[in-house]
Image 1 (cartoon, rainbow, N blue to C red):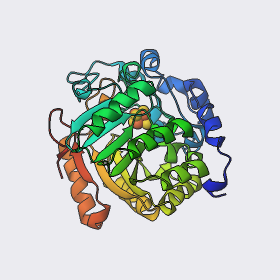
Image 2: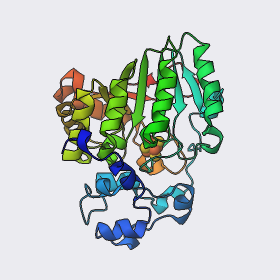
Image 3: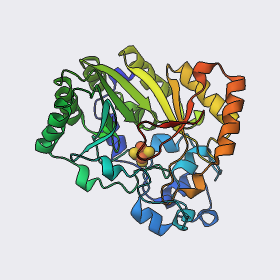
Image 4: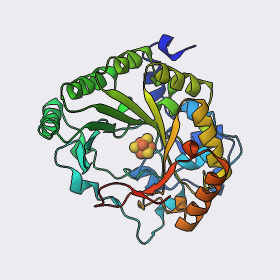
Length: 332
Ligand code: SF4
């Protein structure tokens, strides 16, 4: 069934019925929890959240499943790791208004939603202060005034949390408010919803995006080809038909996608679904995520293998975010 004909609130039912208990996830996947007990501390700090449709794409009985690895709150997160901190990107330095980050020239980022449909254990905002960055409408107007007063800002990025976890009413209000700022020419939405709950790409959302005055770019955050299924393909096809530019941004994650074969398969699948591979990020050094780290040497070797086997337009740029730099640091 094409996404446009789905009931508008089907995705909200999925969003309110996430797997949040590691025991339920382990039982569903027929795994023995004693082999990788969930860290109680890690869970309390950053709870488990997994959409059922995403869990269904995991292979049963496999602790090393690349989708499971992204969401399992392992006890290893609780180990101390020198150099890994709560806010390695120092985002609080670039937060001039509640909900607004201004790090780079020409674009600002709005923390459009304080929550996500999935909790990715490698997330660089897992300790972000969403309470301080959940503006009411009056505060959002301050953010829009800030953007309106700076004609150099040509692009507004909706991030979070996940902006598509917002209901259509609030999302439409944000997009319409941005539309009224004449010098903003593009709205970019960073989201995992089209992959983890593809029903989110509803008829209402498509109508909203088609009606946007600005160019709309959607960056899906997909890390492995196994994340795709027929529902994801239908959601991406619908976004493509609505005139949305589709890009992907991945994180290079140990034991998830840190080999050229996995990344090559991902690039090919993305292209088949009208999505161009854009960035491959080295993981940020966030406390609790050290088990996802990949060395620079290993990353460069993977990139050489990708360059040797794929056309250039399917090779993502390997980048790292360094606080205080005017742009992401391109490595390869
Ligand atoms: S969806 Fe994005 S913001 Fe949310 S937990 Fe995952 S990586 Fe973090």
